[in-house]
Length: 280
Image 1 (cartoon, rainbow, N blue to C red):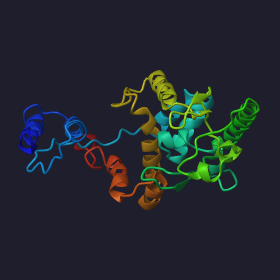
Image 2 (cartoon, rainbow, N blue to C red; image 1 turned 120 degrees about the vertical axis):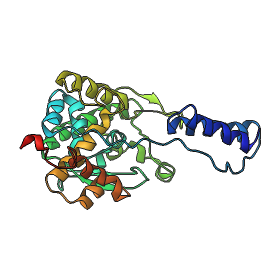
Image 3 (cartoon, one colour; image 1 turned 30 degrees about the horizontal axis):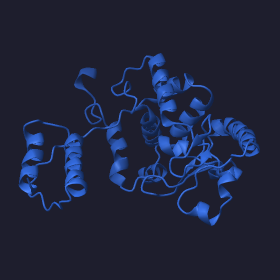
């Protein structure tokens, strides 16, 4: 079988089986991998392939009151991480990878390194988390000193920086703000070191917090949604306060303004902002 048969199969998935776009794409990737790496056959053009339509979904956004209720159910580092997601608009992985050196208490800002698209950006630091964040950094300092004493103390350093500066991985500024509770083996290098906390830890904590509030908005029951709700709310609430869209785009790290404009669409919901005649 060649391009023609593969085309027919993928089109069949979209037209007859009515699969999701992601399922069809996964099937295509699997077939290409099979032909290229197992059968050693290079595939050409697939011609008039019918692609499954990707449904357009707008993000679920919680009101300010709902967001505060969820945050009130969190404590300790769970609350601190969630506040960074909501107060600074960080993605979950950006929060977990945050290094001590990238927090600037004087200017009340946080620098997000190597974000989506390998871009750096700067966002604000909420006033209410400054003291708790300083306390967390002091805890990390004591933990780091203990690790150094025990012969560890290094963290993962991106790209070739560690080869250029062999001791940089043990510098305090490079330590994660939210380190894991245990030393583990880095699968990339085989070195025993302390990684950042696992993303599922916060996801589960937020999921439980949402359940406690009794909020039943669509999407709030899915564990993959929790780490995005604070970022979505961050953007929407800024726009509600009158912040210009370009600034919100920069804070979120969006390359395309259209991605940010989805939050303006959310604000127009309820008949595109038109008052119902039943309310007259």
